[in-house]
Image (cartoon, rainbow, N blue to C red; front, side):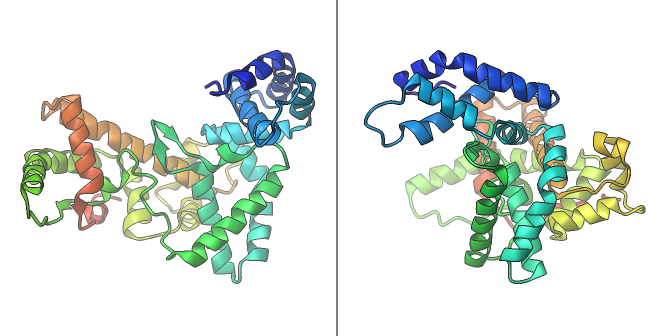
Length: 337
């Protein structure tokens, strides 16, 4: 998406040959990352705006922009863009290159090994992104500019995660991010009691009640249609409260029902069956399971209940705002093998 600043857009167009040159070098180095020229140019434009244009009375010259583009850590930026877009190969490369560094810095900054592991979990959740805005997952990687090394940037991300852990309770992932369009609604099965103290509240209540049964029925059907490994993944994470790293260790165990599933879906493990499963892998498969639930939820409302899109939107709102008593995940226990 082009910038809203026409002057900046003109500068970027004027320097497009340099941006294309850097982009092609990145593609040659990592052809499997799947980063488009538009995505790369958009990220570079954001960096130019932030470092060359912000707070400046006069816009930079084309030569200054070209010099800046050539100076950015383009390989790191390319990796960050690919990870933000969910590319599997890029995530494997990130784990391979930077996982050890992330662990060392976390242990150095945290007061205990347990705190360090919680920091790592939180960092992976933020890097992958659980919040969806206008259909786009908000990955922390999208904030990396390429101006400094990705490890220097990671150090700042780790420090902020440590501060957040001290400020908040140590819940693994607050589901508010996952629920920008569904999420938390899938952790609940009954409505909160309302104080119907006025006409507006009564109308709101009646509207909710109209779609209540369809919403709850479709949620339950969506969950029941999941494969056993998907149910088990949700059960471990939400009902049993296991951390991402704990699920990863379970998936590595020879007797784990998740092991074969992860191996079948990992190109890296096809080459090396002993390769570690990292938090990012668990987060990606949780995200895919949430998307599958959303797809089946909407399909159920449309097909079985005959609802139109505007009515489905109401049910989505109910699912994300008005459901309480979280026990749907616990109900998976009897079906997850």
